[in-house]
Image: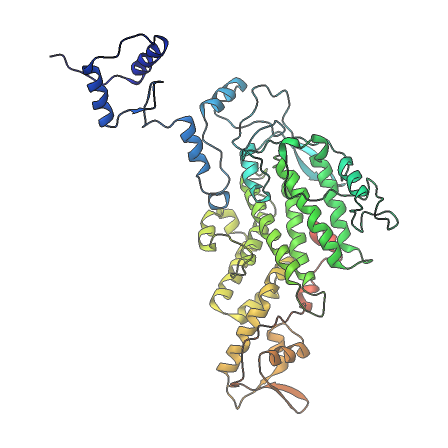
Amino acid sequence: MADTFPASHGDMSRQSNSHDNNRDVPKPSSSNNNNNNNNNSHGEFDSIGRHGFMDARNSHQQNSSRKRNNRPTFWQRGPIAPSMSWRDQSRLAEMGSRNSYDIPDDVHGDAAGRRPQSTGTQPNAEPHWEKGGKWRSRSNKSVPPVRALAAYSDVGVQDEGNLVTSIVGTCQDMCPVREREQRQRLRDLAIFERINGKTDETSATLAVKRFCRTIAVAELQPSDVRPQHVLWETLQYLLEMTDRRDCTFESVHAFLFDRTRAVRQELSMQCIANSQAITMIEEIVRFHIMSERELQEQIAGLRNDADSQLNLQQLSKSLLTLLNLYSAVEAEASSGWAHEAEFHGYYVLLNLGDRGHSKAEPLALWFRRVRSLVLQAPAFMYCRRVLRCYRSGNYKGFFDLAQKASYLQGCLMELYFGEIRTLALRAINCGGYKTHPFLLGDIAELLLMKEDDTEEFCKTHGLITCLDKGQLYLTAKQTTFSPSIQTFRHQCSLISRKRAPTFFQEIVGVRDKN
């Protein structure tokens, strides 16, 4: 008897094709049917109808796409390039770079990194900052659109197919003409956009594009999107408004909060990931850090929870975007980006405790993905010392480090001052001796507070101070101590003195050398 072997994938496909073309061909014999049944019983082949057979052990185009979509999110393992499909390989082969993702950023593409076969464009040169407030081209390095989209994934620009097509904006104004005219008709102009206070009159030099939560990418026109250099000029115009004194900071923050989100959104829509985009996101992060401190000092030390929570949410998202851009864009220097360690430290200070504003991964896991150059930087090592003092309850070391902090570091550490001060009062009240009261001035110096504020802080926690020989004392072992749920917030004068002469100089990193 002749030996029977399973038919190969190609043979079975050819048999199926011939069966389709010749419908009158008689059915195969019973012996052939038995062979096919045996093959299927062993799980070697998976029949998918009369169009032939498919080897279930091989990953097909649909399965590979599903595998890419099921990968962990960008903040778990960083932005990564997708596995190359047969379509991507053929297109890259036509461009002459089968093993490279060096594709121009200004070519339209979707979230999977697919590009047209004929681009007809040149790659955008990566700019860098030089004196005089201008940007100059330095290199032709580009970032794959899939990595850029992964870095900006918190912005949430999607269409019906979960694929985003990158476009190149052509709008040369801070606000597109169509939106500006529509908002004039609807009398929907902010106070900073009006001419002589009129709600239905504005100009191209005043109106700034608003943030749109839902965007129909298919209907979006290039004239509705601002290119990179216009986004840069718009952001500088917005940040200069932080020093306005003719209105409250809350109104300025509400305006900038919305317009800076629109800037980030359009950076994502155009898949812009270069050194200038990193600088823009850095300035937006500094703005949110500075704003958090100012928002909590507006009304007699009472905290505006609504604005504060929204600001912390956007701060966390902007910071995650920036950290992913650091890993997505190749640094020009071998030592990395100039402010990379600074902003990695801000991430640590923002996530010292569980404040409910960020769903980030635990810092213990996050540290494993930080580059060694960043881990060894002095700015980052300082933030790790702050983290150790906070986690161990070392309030003395925490406030000692706060005196050495920069202004923006102090703004983030000040978010936890109330919690650490409560911990210090508990330790002083429980660990002290009743016969040896503490001088209130010494406690105020330890907690970085004024003596009057310290007395009020003790009263909100149920502690009574006593006056002896013209000085206030705090007696230990008081049973009336209870942690206060009332928010007590006063700006620390020590941190305020560290700020640059203007908010704008603090945000853009300019310092007065004199």
